[in-house]
Image (cartoon, rainbow over all chains, first blue to last red; front, side):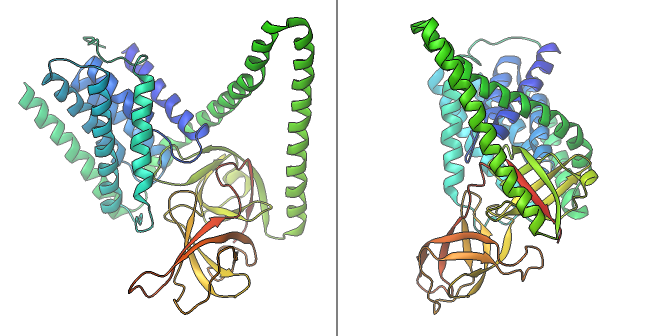
Length: 156
Length: 263
């Protein structure tokens, strides 16, 4: 429970860093942390953490509750499924996984906002999302030594 | 076990979709207001701490590195540099606040001046958080400006904080006029740091560099405020209108204070 609460605080700090230090396009630090948490502490815990972290993002967005809850819990669920089907996990696989889940994250949020809100995406450039994915991949590479998910930990 | 987990997960996702459907039917959720209030209070504190840490890194860490080279002499110089930097910062802030004060005196629709403490943490929206809210007289759809020009409009208001949707946001549209040719159009955000000027006929002669001002026809933004300048003009195939890109008159990512005006 202590670890879970620590990670919630970590998600909040990551969100604050994104909101204050970055100008323009920001990497999705929370996605990196959610994937790492799911790999370390299991799928159920990962989904719970992903959902809470997503709720935090949706709340700060102030538009619609749900898109990031789905996106982050989907990432947490499937990253662990991927891990279970692979013999080993290293920095290259981790980076590739973050890249895939970052794209899925963008697509899920886009679909949810497009279907369930009045947000118009007609003027939005795809370059924004492409840059976000690249920045998130770079962030995952930088944070890999800190959130090394190679070591699996049982229980929270 | 795995199948059971998958079913639970799918049920959870369906539940969230139910919540999304409920929000799309009922409109804006009050749950956001309920959860945001403690978050904005915490965010103000965190923002202040992060700025303090950044300042520390900008001054002390650099100074410490130099001290190791020549502790005695450089220590003195660095202390002076730090003092100079503080004076410089105070001077810049003073200048900024003096301009705001001038704006306050010049406008009858002035409400309050607020400090920006955070931006949107994701890349989906272009918004700012300011430290003033309902208690300072701010209401939804009031306009945020600086001494240079318009910034955006108030989207959400809390007791001690508000969220401002920038003119560069994809949900933003402003009635504008080209300053020299007097052609009117709608300025829409692109979701990054620029905008599109829409509904300008192919017959209209629009030049790169031409300045845009607010027309006031949207009943929201006061007329005559400088909003940006044209950076590119394209005429694509069968389209009825020109594709015009506009760069805002100010860097909206580096705002420190904004002035709120009445509608």
